[in-house]
Amino acid sequence: MAQSIFMGHVQLHERAWGLDKYPDRPTLDDILKARIVAFWRAKTSDAGYRITLHESGDAIVDYINTLLFKTPVHPPDRRLVKLFVEKEEVRIKGVKLILERAEAK
Image (cartoon, rainbow, N blue to C red; front, side):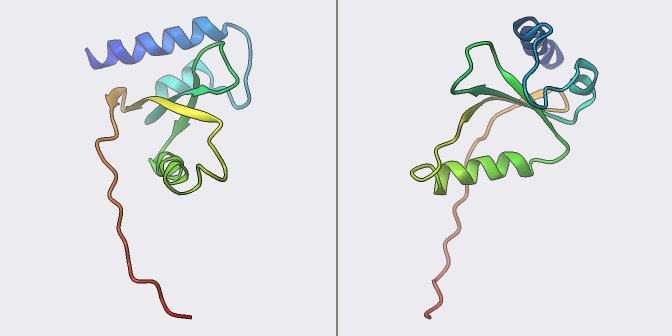
């Protein structure tokens, strides 16, 4: 079932973009082989989701950090819509914020 949900989103992506390109658009083969597949909705795009591929979650963590700490200064140009790890949909369940005492200067 999990793979059919993943494949449904991949098929929608491929239909929406057809032969059109966007920067760093992965090939279908690369999408199917990727460990982590993130689906994004760009603010300026109405053509469909854009996909990025990742070996680790570092880029996703960086995106979340940007949302938490930099949005007023640098609003993101895209929104994370779906996230799949090993073709299984995952959700961000929570974010742990760790505070520490500021050093006196």
